[in-house]
Image 1: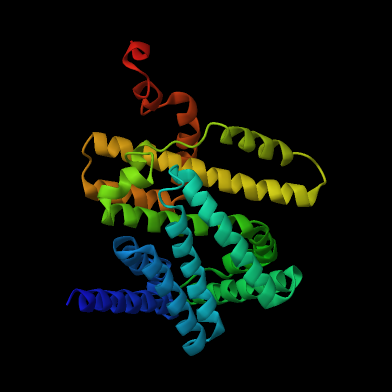
Image 2: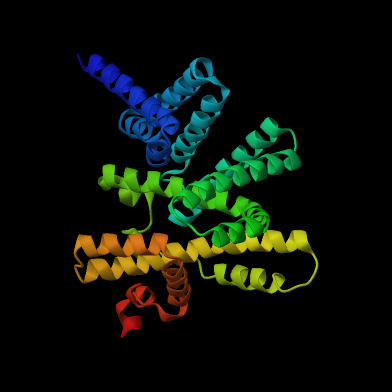
Length: 316
């Protein structure tokens, strides 16, 4: 009877994982659900044994490759690699910034290798992305024109479209890395909520509201900012701009942690919290303010974390 229950839970986790990945064919739902494809397998493996979870990841990846084609097989393989990395790193890398960034780095390299394999060269990949971006933006402009946008505005956007696409492609590595890091972080947070008793075993932080970026990160910010003002050296400036965006993402996360800390401390209603987070995500000025808040928290220590970490005699 116990073995039957284990097999039924194994089958349920397998089906749920497959369905979450298949949601990618429904774009609005896929954006939210597909990144959680490894979650049922992770929960099952952490509860019943990592070997079971790793076997399920390999099985589902094989099934996707056989029955759903190369594209979906590679997509699920990406989430399977995410699950495998978390199985390997949880409890071994207890600083969440290193856990997220290390897992994201492995996934980013794997993603780059797969893209290079599919396109054959970086130039072919960039050309394909450029054509695809231009096609989607042009289609969006056509919709906006039907909705009443003035012809002058449409022409102005089309005139600047090549420059905007080139700028986006230059920042594509950083955007992909940040997206990967967000997916990893979401999966870690969901596991922490599902297994709260294992949080002390997995992470050194009691709560993510207390998270703070490593202090040495500010030197990377300064160095990248300095390189951006050096004339010439376009490839070096592009690398610095991408690294600057990734570092900005880290300080954005710290700024969110500061806001969440004071929301929790002052018992702010959930509705107001939700409205604030929506504004932060969709209004650029609020996004930049949160990045600035995270950066200045290095010196302001708004949560008094450094003082709380002192011994009683030192604090006095």
